[in-house]
Length: 367
Ligand SMILES: *Cc1c(COP(=O)(O)O)cnc(C)c1O
Image (cartoon, rainbow, N blue to C red):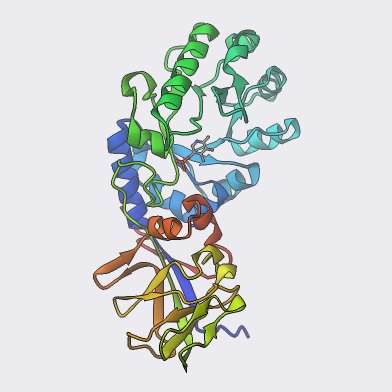
């Protein structure tokens, strides 16, 4: 017999919200999107997200992953859409990519030759225009001219390093990309180009030149604003139960290192989630939760399994749920806000949410 306890907390993911975000990103981008679902859909569940977004038809051109295992998971789950793998694969992994029908990103002549020998399907040529991480350097592109004319890619692409920060680097990288593609010589008609990530879609600087035929979007799908546009919605709710409420006297401290000192007689609620659940330590004494629609500040250092809140001014009982991320009443704490308060990357915050709490899904049905 399996004994299942009533959950002490959960992460709820709004799949309808993700679908609405995808439509909005597609509208702003003006081209189909590649939905990035790497790292288990930024921690929110790659299979569930892909199943939902598959229903949007050709507006979602394909799904982006980082590894063969991630691609395999999508295939096993019955996802029929195109799957692109963006991290360079080791030569020995190309056979697995072929078996799974995955589109690899390639940039080395020997890998392109091997992919051809394996009778691999469509592949994408990665061009490095300043990220210095993967792809053929834009100044080295002629070294690929022969491989490419011999076995042309379905698409050529590059990746911006600072689309959320600087106009200049985006236009510089776009120029480098366009120049490299010109030097490559004639690509077959219908070859695609893709450059933009979420932030670049929002910025759309030099849109004519740099728009490309597809946009690769990850973080914006999951409701984080990396630029003014598109105006995506928060899709994550994180709630955990109050497991203890106590009164402490003025001058008493709360938590490790005693970083919170009660300025008056105070009520402290202990919630059963901490950084072991992805509610990061950087939020100590900085963030707030929502209880009965009211803000309650984090008091003291977030520990691994528990977080303490100052509930002196709010009604609170054991068993109440505190909303750490999401809406309660008229107020909402977004992933954006939590990341800002903790001065942490919203990407890291999201991927950390799958650590321990169960994930539940809203809107698994039709779009
Ligand atoms: C992860 C990734 C993206 C998505 O970036 P976001 O900022 O999340 O939109 C786009 N392109 C590549 C190559 C990536 O690895």
